[in-house]
Length: 268
Image 1: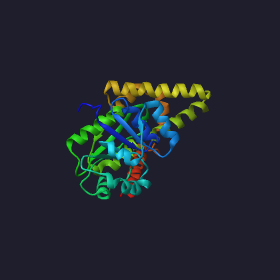
Image 2: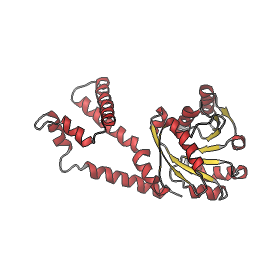
Image 3: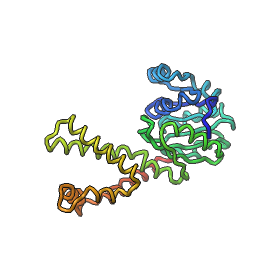
Image 4: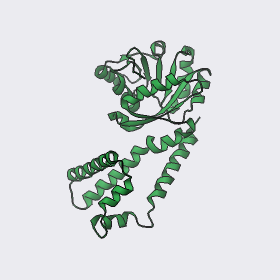
């Protein structure tokens, strides 16, 4: 669906995710921001020329309202939004654990809601966002939400029952990757490199390997085997990494299941 500059998007909350959405869409939509932290809101106004407003003003002018606040503040926020809601408004929530049904119920039932789960790389417009459709949302609503989040990365539509798994895999996923990089850099320093050189070697190796994986369309196992000559240096390293008492497949499965379980526990 073509992006329409005459579409008004209101964003409530200007934290990391809210600000990332503003940065990605401000040139393509009319953007209104409601944020209680004046330092954050003024910074966005100066950088992206967005309009700052209070909640009532945002509700009045916005066609699409993105809720970019923490789950703890949702009940109060939805209560304050309810008097200004109408069927012409589309509500998009990026909060973990807040179901479309919960939002619909708090806003009066016949409300169009789409739930979205972006991840941290949206800050550099390289994220991926899982979205799911509420009971009253339409195909046009989904297309519009794809247009918005497509400005900051890729978008994947799933059923709502899978959104907790999206949270576990891609929403929390950058932290798994950063942990790996952190340990990799520490190891590089332990074999004698300075912090600066270790960072350069590790990050460029990861960047190049990722490009190769994406461009070649080969399975990661195939590429791993291409780098590994029996009896060579890579083989020696992989013998350690793939020792029988370290089952990375099980570790990752257990980690993802734990994240998904926690997401379900937080759901309402």
